[in-house]
Image (cartoon, rainbow, N blue to C red; front, side, top):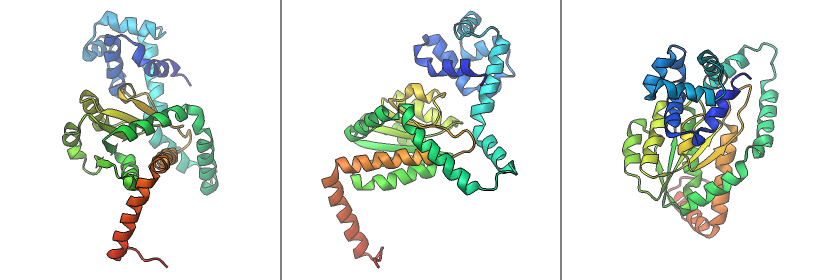
Length: 283
């Protein structure tokens, strides 16, 4: 792994100066363009001086701009395009005929290693934040959209107001603009991050909305704007949402358990309505 310097830099973004954070944000959001920019062009586009940029490189232990660009290239190759290339490599592997066994084995390993990511303390913070919020806004785009809808559905018995932002992406900014300050935005997103997700979080943060970020990568500027980060391990060999599902279900089970009396009443109401209108049939 040759991109340790840039990875460490992104993880320590909060400790940088204001100008360096601005520069770091630009790098995060424009990694694919950096290969085509000179040092002067990058500094100008990021809104900082040339001296600030080279001091930034020195503080990050880069010996040259060339080394910095090489680190960015390696980081993109191993992270930003990982979903595509992991899947591409997987289906091209002629020696792997037992996809069922290998998929289950890797999923098991991921779930076993989840608690080594510091997830436990963040999990409790997320629970407390959701409990104290008047409303939960849920956002997931692309492959995370169905997870967001699933989370909304299984949270329903909790009886808390839920604002689903994921269904119509054209209305995301409209809805976030109208959220009150006692709302928590629950974001489900894995790298690579789309512009609409990053901009939506920026708007929520600007409007003092609390943010819970469920992800398998913390390199994005989203991390610095989040109140709680639920970080799951990332598969090295394939794209998977299994860790996300596990966290969503664990959160839901915990929340429903802590509000068992209210949840029981709500489940009874749901059951009575389903029976009345013949929506379910029990054998």
